[in-house]
Length: 273
Image (cartoon, rainbow, N blue to C red; front, side, top):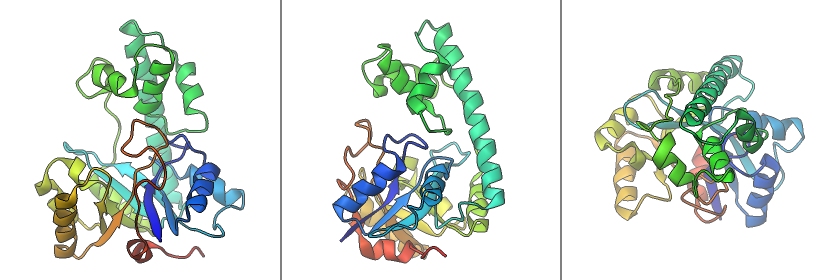
């Protein structure tokens, strides 16, 4: 059997609703599914409040993905978090508020550079998501005919050091680890290869985290072997996932295209109370 411990819904920057993601996972026969939206637990709360979590036929792991303030691209995934933890929700509100300010600033920069885009265009793309990011803006630019692809929008305007780039408010590595732990969760370093520096990966692995995402779509056999060794040397659990967003701009286009063995998910999963 197979599992996926890294997925996103339209409550952040995915294109599937939580119901659609859950239905797709069930139809594929996945045993474990972790929902790990960026900066929000709204998607999992939505499932819970509509009687869909816990779910029959599949084990859901409530999660979140947070980017750390660092010169390198460090993303941490929290698993088994209390989605109604007060301190967690307070910090997530801060992050969401900062995202909205940033989104408005980016749109103004794009307009100043002559691009046909309004905040309303982005909000229409974002739909249910309060966690508005550059991917929503890029998709709006493509829809408005400004660019042919999301990748082109990033490469020409939205990437770091480009004309419409605006830095985002981020929590420190230590803050994220403490926040997730205090919310009852486990902390995993996501896609370590994308950090771009294995010395930094080693530092993060010694910072108090609990797991490493060894299996990831862009990790080749040598990468898997290397990060498996890092996990073993630091007594960390091994995880993996597709980073599924439901859009063609990601590493996988379809849920189930990249999965991990259940034995890894079993080490992470905790039954909901």
